[in-house]
Amino acid sequence: MVRFSACVLAAAMLASTEAFAPALTTQRSLTTTSKNIVTSTTNSPVILSDMLTQTELPEKLYFPEDKEAAKVLGGVKIGSRKLTVITGASSGLGLNCAAKLAKTGRHFVVMAVRDVEKGKRVAKEFGFPEGSYVVMKLELGSLQSVRDFVFNLKAFKSARPVDNLICNAAVYKPTDPEPAWTDDGFEQSMGINHFGHFLLANLLVDDMAKAKGARMCIVGSITGNTNTVGK
Ligand SMILES: NC(=O)c1ccc[n+]([C@@H]2O[C@H](COP(=O)([O-])OP(=O)(O)OC[C@H]3O[C@@H](n4cnc5c(N)ncnc54)[C@H](OP(=O)(O)O)[C@@H]3O)[C@@H](O)[C@H]2O)c1
View (cartoon, rainbow, N blue to C red):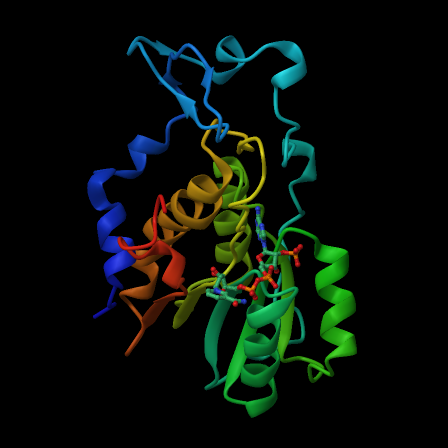
């Protein structure tokens, strides 16, 4: 039985993956307070591009042409190792966690990263053993990229279920003067840290339910506690 953390369950307010249909956000007249917080005043649905002026429109994080060709296992044999997917495995905690797991010889690690070249480079720098990992493109700021990643992951691993999913990638920009947006029109820390991972978990949960002792691990932060948000 796959266990969710409270974090993922909280996101269940978005009742199904249908909630991830392309960005219809709430129309709002943009009011910038002294803290540069954007507030909304009306409720009619409109796409982000209608909300913002041309100069305010965010740069896209993912383009469909970025979609990787599906990788195949080729000569790699996962054998009795756990198949472990780690998001944000190209730096920080995710990279160190991926390296440790790969070096135990008990995990085959899928490094799910937004910058594949960086992922390949750091895997070499950190001495990941040959045949212990693969690097795959995942831009969590684009729900299309999440879907493309899952498609490629499933093609790569074939019928073998994923044993572990570690949702680690995140952005943290509390001091940025202006909000930044995902390709689907969500504020980035909500879109990348939570909604992207929520869709990823949803798209993998049925597959993971086939694995014995599967686990989803959601890396959180004390800054998400109710006593710190907004202070
Ligand atoms: N460090 C701390 O003190 C601390 C404290 C509390 C909680 N945490 C939590 O620990 C986790 C890891 O933090 P960290 O300190 O290791 O941070 P980090 O070094 O900044 O690593 C974050 C990772 O997320 C990736 N990432 C960012 N945006 C992404 C996107 N749009 N799509 C896909 N991947 C994306 C980054 O990719 P790139 O390599 O391409 O930049 C990077 O690999 C986070 O969940 C964070 O909230 C950290």
